[in-house]
Image (cartoon, rainbow, N blue to C red; front, side, top):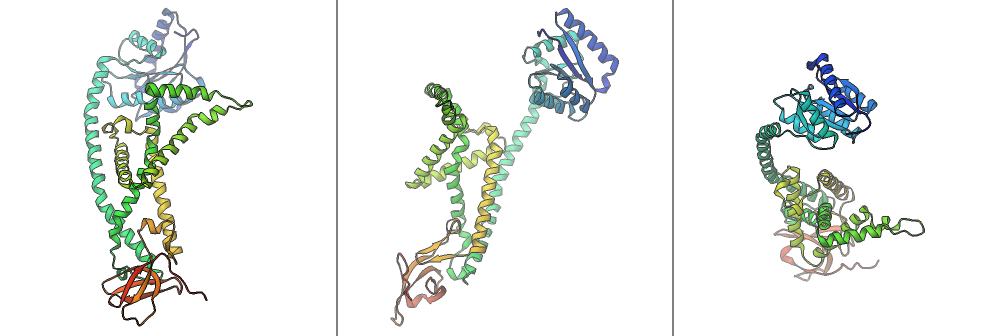
Length: 434
């Protein structure tokens, strides 16, 4: 027990009555005295506002919090006390038939255990001694009842999460239709600025959906693995070789140069994480560069599914080495959402404001050519009847009747009958000097 007085704050419901609380505190004070301990009453609160004010001002060492305050005010008090006084010990007081939801929420908020407030004061004092030592106090029978009551809710919750997961997967079907409509609209607006219709090119713009989705999976495959960095570093640390590396890094962190902790700068936690990110991205980009696009796409698919499972709280279905740190799930989703928003914004500027950037060597652009799978290939067009000189132009596409060409020299669109010309691809259109 502590040598200095244990400062107690008790949070009770109005139903307990002042007389009952005074009797309880008197008995508790006697038990502390018999145990050669010292005891002070920091305060008694019957509502959330008073309780939080006393936590802030009286700074108690021990809190006894009645779980039956209206709504979830008891949980809010425990959560506030845990944040403001991390060293304070908190014991929840429950009725005989412990409400499993409030007990679980109290433990989650920071309580070290719970005890039935209807039992003898000596038993409550025993629980208090446990939590003052930093031990958990979870009475076996009551805890068993709480777990039994919560099991049915957990079962329903897991089933609902699985159903939600399947519903999200099914929602990708209409989402693909939305993406197809989006791409078709972008195509029309992009080529429409130079007077070309999608039907003139003989293509179905919505057929570009696979390319659009593949691009997203490639980005997931290249950059997605960085969300596992904390998990992998922790697993490596547990290995024997990893422990040796960890010890070596700790020694390097102690290095100083001219009074500057150069070791902490180069080998701090953030620096190690940054090095790991660089290594992972360099590795995945190397795979993609040497032609391993299928591997990267597969990695992207796996990461997308894993992230979806974590969002649906189904992470238990994921192998330990592929679990994402709980603190990273929301930032990862927020980052992906932000990147998608920025991508659409930049793409919209390129499509609606800048328009096609057609040069002698083909189509240029930052996102549009890649995301929308657009192309304009330099070509030489020969008249089969030899009535016209060969024409250098950018081949945009064509239908059954016409070739659609863009002359980068004259900056005009030309339509040539398929039956009267032959197209030969070249590296660059040569414009006559003027």
